Each structure stands twice: as C-alpha cells, then as structure tokens.
Length: 69
Image (cartoon, rainbow, N blue to C red):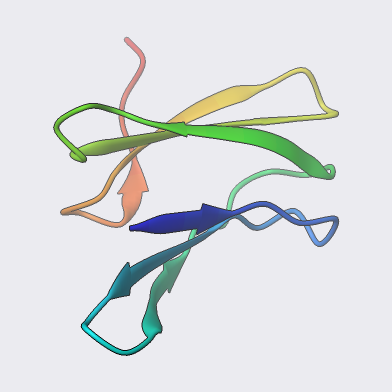
C-alpha cells in the first residue's frame, strides 16, 4: 500500500501486486495542498492533512471521508 500527497489537493491510494503499484482511487475533498498522510495499522483508514488546517479520515473500503460526528 502507498498513499501519496499532492499540491493538487488530492491524496492518492495505491495497492501493489508483485510487479507494480496500481492507483486504486483519488481522495477528493481538501481545498488546499495536502501535506501529510498516515495509514491505520489495519489499513482500513487513511488520514490526510492540508494547509486548510483540516484533517480528513478516509475509509479505504468506501473511498469516502468518514463522518466525524
């Protein structure tokens, strides 16, 4: 698994097979440059932070932000 961050406001999530990484989905929802990310030990969630002072938590199975309520 690999997660990349970008100035285009979109982290991307990749999975690898034996030979290469394949992009699974792009996480859209930030309005500023994404500067950091982390993956949960279970690989069920991805956290991403950006210059808009926002931390988003994403479900890797649903490809969408988790509700923070």
